[in-house]
Structure formats: structure tokens, C-alpha cells
Image (cartoon, rainbow, N blue to C red; front, side, top):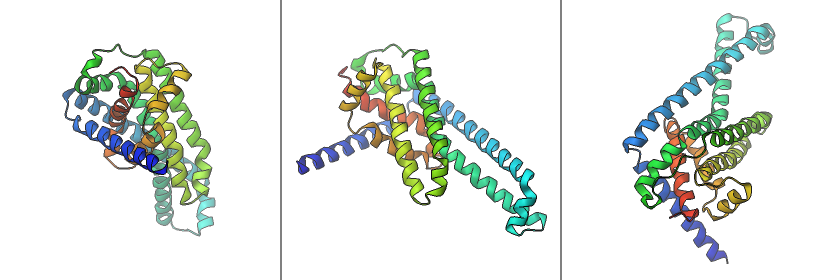
Length: 250
């Protein structure tokens, strides 16, 4: 039993590495390149808006309570106070960007799901033929619902992140790995006609490795500068490779 389980885990790891290799190997596809550029621009714009909003909010709070903070930290001169405020604003903005970047990438991926999946199908699964695009309204509704869940859960966990010290990284990775893996999986499942909850659950049982394991890798990619800009496209391509063989459509 133990040996069979180890063999299965090794096979799953090999499959996942192969799917990532296929995804990175297709980044030069003209159809993928154009989507990659648009996706990266959306992510960069989202980062800038989020960082600016949080930074301005922090500066507003500091401006309102600056005198109290100055006396709390024993700072008298304006330069020291300004330096402290800048560091605080930078750290808080960085924290919020890291926390909410994953929901941003997941929602961005939903905008290009059909185009990315179609490019993967043409190269790797030509026997599928040309599939109709998933319902835009259903896809948008699912993306908004799952993205809202990602945002809400992370907002609720902010106190935990701050209070749990080094363990916060583990909590953040596990929670977001599960939610992000689930979001990308369900969006991909929708393209292949899996809409009902029981059908999605049945498909999930046939996907190896499962969405949680794949989601953990996506969270890791999201933490790597510049590579994280590729995440919406890479994640969609990898999930397509995982889902298509499990649908029995090839």
C-alpha cells in the first residue's frame, strides 16, 4: 500500500512537471504571446492601483494620527518621522499587494480562458476539434464569485497573518493554494461542459495531482517577481493539460 502510494505521488509529480514544461514551451506561440502581453499589462496596472491606493490610505491615517505616532516612537524631527512613515507605507502596501495579487491574477485568467485553452488544444489536443467558447456570463459569474471568495477569506485572515509570525506564510500558502487551485480548476471545467457541482466534483476526483497541489505551485509562482506576471496564462495552460485528459474527450 505504501509503495503504491509513493509510486502514485512520483507519477503525479512527473505529470505536473511535464504540464509546466509544455506550458512554458508554448509561450512563444503567437496566439499565447498576444494574450500574455495583455494579461501582464492588466496585472501591472492592478499592482500599481492597489499599491497606490493602499499607500495613500496609510499616508492618510498617518497624517491624521501623526502626532500620536511621533510621541509613541519618540521622534521629534520631521525627517525621522517621514522616513518611518515611508517605511510603514511601503511595508503595508507590499503586504496588501502580495495578499490580493492572487485574486487579481485569477480574475485576469478568466478573461482569456477560452483563448488560452483553445491555443493549448490546437497544439496538444487536436482531436478535440474546435470547441465552442464557454458561456461568457456563466464564466464571469463564476470568476466573480470565486475571486470574491479569495478576497473575503484573505481579508478575514489579515489579523491571523499579522499575529501568527513565521507560521503566517504557511497559512497564507495553504489557504490560497486551495482557493486558487479550485478557481482555476472550476473555470477550466466550465469550458468542457462541467457546470453542476456533482459533475465538477466527479471531474476533480479524476484529476491528478489535485487542484490543491497545483494551487500551491501557483502561489509559489505568484511570489517570484516578473515570473508572477505570467501566472494567469501559465496557470490556465497547466490546468488545461490537467483537465482535458480527465474529461474523456480525447
